[in-house]
Image (cartoon, rainbow, N blue to C red; front, side, top):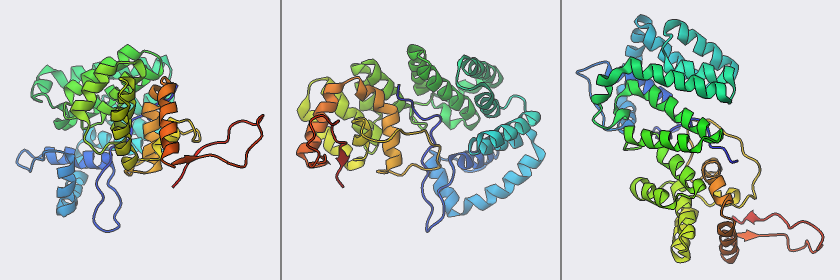
Length: 339
């Protein structure tokens, strides 16, 4: 079974010049600080907030954040949890334990500790379910009624949304597929603008389950037009409904967005491992790996679609083999994407 990456990082905008990409957790940390000031500016989305930071707001918020964490153990615990997400396992566990001494209810810290100490078996699933139940009670019904359908805008709710997504991924990998899909559908209700990218994971699950109409509905509503995962999903979906002309058109867009994904879809690449990085560049091999992790099983379940893709890529001159390998008893030569 092809696994999807755990808690993939949210791409952030590059700063001017050669400054690094801001970490998604760093952005959320400063956004929490911004929301502490009821008279402060409000932002339509995280991208607008990053622009505001780049325009000079970051220094002010960073200074204010230092004061806040020195006085508020709950916020200090949350910052430690953010740091832990980007650390190796042993150091992440140490940071999570420090956070839990300050705030035993910190959902992110509890989830990190569970991941490091429980492995990825049933114990971890039960632990995440317990964390979510506690978080729901702590936030309370009144808190969620204020979201007006967009819970991502309520920054303190994000650890809950993040943990729910982690649970959905674990349930899928453990074979509890209907439960996993139910969680993704619930997350789409809580975050209808799909800030977290749950739509692409839901599409991958629907396609792997053969839920063609449901996958179509999600793609029509949530495909932003520049997502390689969504583009390669459209190729497969059009083949599943026997529309090769539409699949051919969809393939042009998918290749334009990320041609490297074809290698993984056809099973020609090396075994990939999940990576957590601050940024996944559009059109990169790292993005292609994400496509394979999310869509690999769905394409594997449709070998005729893979055959079609291989044929078209060969016709386009994008795939070739070793013409000197003429031994009929030898395995077929590996195909490669021609740059």
